[in-house]
Amino acid sequence: MTHLTPVREAVRVVAIEAARAYVANIRPIDLTNPGVLVGHLMAAETLLMEIVAAHDECTGAAA
Image (cartoon, rainbow, N blue to C red; front, side, top):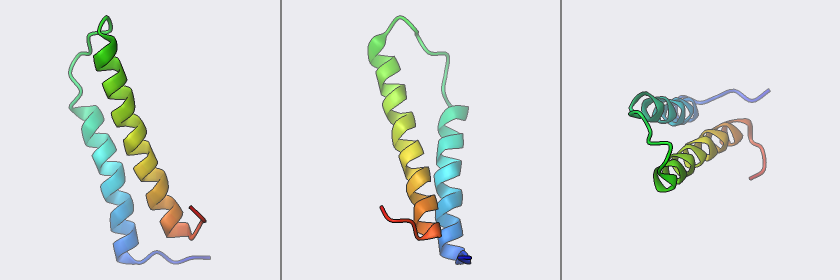
């Protein structure tokens, strides 16, 4: 079992909080504007990749 260091745990929390803050600050989205939709999808994908990377680092999984 891998024990998390405070720094690794902080990285996880920061990644999760960044995603939470992004979602909390989304205004009503114009669903007829494909550019806005793509932008939100790309931002969400980036945030999710950061969360996965933070958890992989913590567990020692290969990248």
